[in-house]
Length: 161
Image (cartoon, rainbow, N blue to C red):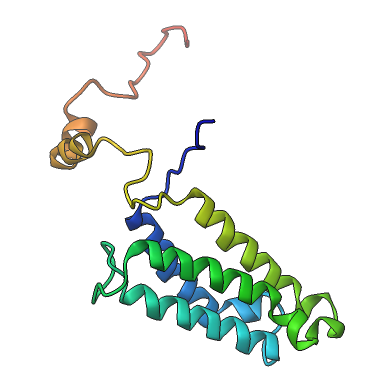
């Protein structure tokens, strides 16, 4: 049976790690309506831990490169399950849906991200880097002013198209 495509490479995974880690530590608890609660503290702790072990992962955006990418992915899975179970283990699910739904949603997001991440770090899809480099060397003014005008004045008395 063929394996499903895994488009996320290690660089995109790193971008997601740092972006989501920062969001969880800063704004997410307020957006989720759990600011000032145990849920907020758990979410912030999870985001800080995620960003911390991302800095020591051996992938393009890692700073110290101590742990292998596959170990990082295992930590992601463990962290997702732990975060999803936290409100049920602590009993805070009894305080209402708002106290457990963000945890479960974040866990599902993380597990979905893991399902789309190539554990080799390469990813299944790649853009044409050389085409991007060539396009970046072009002068955009040439494309705007070098060709025929996009708008022309209609001569007086000529029928309009």
